[in-house]
Amino acid sequence: MLRALLDRGIRNVALGMIWDPQTVSIATTTGVGARLTLRIGGKVAPCRATPLILMSKCWPAAETSAKAASPRCGFDPIAAETIYADTPGTLLVDLSKLPYKHLVRPIWPMD
Image 1 (cartoon, rainbow, N blue to C red):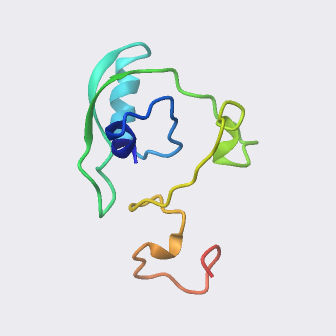
Image 2 (cartoon, rainbow, N blue to C red):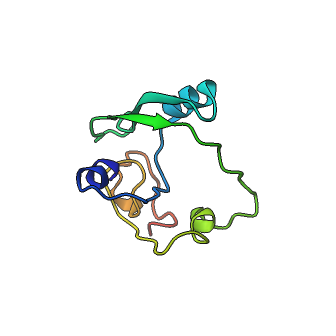
């Protein structure tokens, strides 16, 4: 998703879910305000894409709250629009598309 946005020159966009603990660890160690080249994404999903190599700036992490009922709670106050995209990988909107091998069915939220 990030690659497609950058390829099309789309800016001022926030992506809600990129699972990349390795990059987070590097950025956390480097500190707020640091500029560094990072390999972002494409590391953990079985159908992963090639990681993006980007010049990045480290921003302060957002505060999280146990009261947060939705991953959108941090974005809704500042977003003009929210668009859900069902992309390949481990963060699918339709969980039934994941290749579960030992899942006992029926199970919520798929069935």
